Image (cartoon, rainbow, N blue to C red; front, side):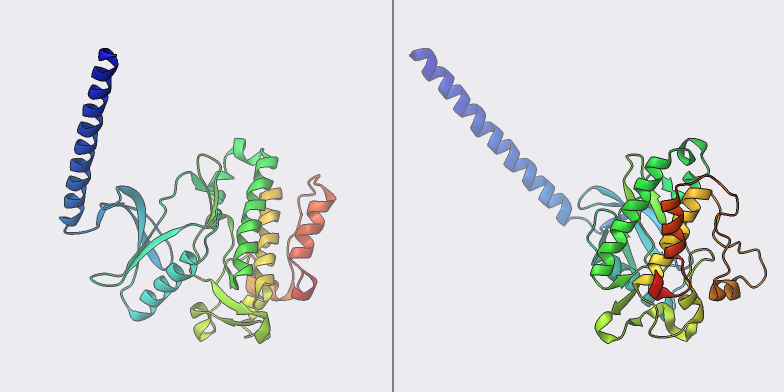
Length: 289
């Protein structure tokens, strides 16, 4: 009985000591965080796009490594475009859409997001081992479809789906990134699109993936079917390794508007069902997609 009482006393002392040490640790961490003069430590540049430059950074409050995006230009239009991308992406909480963590507009303008690992689909498809894994590539395609189905359900279209904007990390996680051209749409308003990128009737997109209605720059016809067209271009590239329309050909945008594509020109043996899906997705008439 005496031994049991001694053991109980020792356990009680250990618990009180542990709790005291734990409280001290929490207090010191709280003090450390409160003493921070800045939240983010900028480390090194890791990439850039047409509108933004991206840096590796560390959130000193959470200890998390992340990516930080600045506008490449400091003019009002570039800042608005960056904030537009950040707000749109942050609102799309989906496993296959890159997460945005925070937006800063005080001393400087930037947003933070998940730091990407692995590589984009365009670069990965150059590797023979990756290129020959057709089952995995179709799984990647399926995850991109999932991401777009979700964004469309929220009234958002991407408008720049292409292999460069699909990230596959070392664990096989697929993320649709770069929502800078994204726009909102509403079927209740006759499929009217409101997008910063549509100002001044600019043609924004990539040959082989950009839809005829995007090239036409006609208000009121760009909607989720434009993303479906891009998915057709993506599937074609996955299946054949070739872009659906060579940008080096003369007047490529005019060819897009007329539906003059180069589909399955290699004559590869491919499942007829996948051919049919590709062709239907890339119909000139959006109503047939």
